[in-house]
Length: 272
Image (cartoon, rainbow, N blue to C red):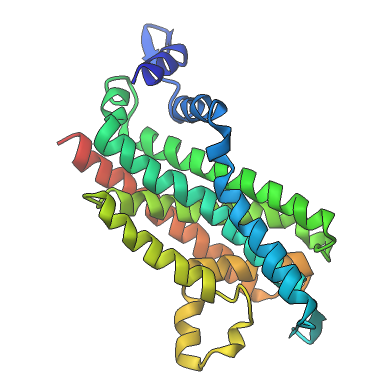
């Protein structure tokens, strides 16, 4: 709480007789100050996709020739790497927008102190989601560098893979924080893992969507991680189609809806 107060004090100033709050950047700065001393915890969500890439994408990839996508043969490691990039962005965003937000909301009571300043619940939502997106973006940038070093980027379209991963992080962070506002105990987070793990395993991460029957395929194609995997895979391989545009619209809509719900829920939880 002291760190929050000191941060807000530095980022609040007088202008024309009015007190102006630093807004969402104040919360983002607070998160940076916290993780600056605990950088090991910051890196945890990044390492898992990298290990999957080396163990499955490279290890298993030595036994599998690859898959044909849009009439072009793609090596297995090139197929898996973009999916791991999408997963890396998701991990970074979800960690901060769910577990960390719940702790600050229910136990630390950080937001009660924040709202004692000129900040609003909308500022809280934007600050927390903004930090979660930044964390997912850092994970994505690091993973993209790993892909470049391993020669797993096959097109100049890949320069857009990082913005695509950041968009994925925004969608998951906004919805993750929205769902967190409904959670009552730590046991509810089992539902988060129950949703994330199947998405990770079955969103065309390790094998093409065509491996599924038509009914199951429609369900998977409606999941956010699949939309992100399709977008980033097409950009990484250069095989860009209309599906990428569909994915962008899907993720933007998901993020905006999540932000709307977060603001409404924080109003009910903190102002009533």
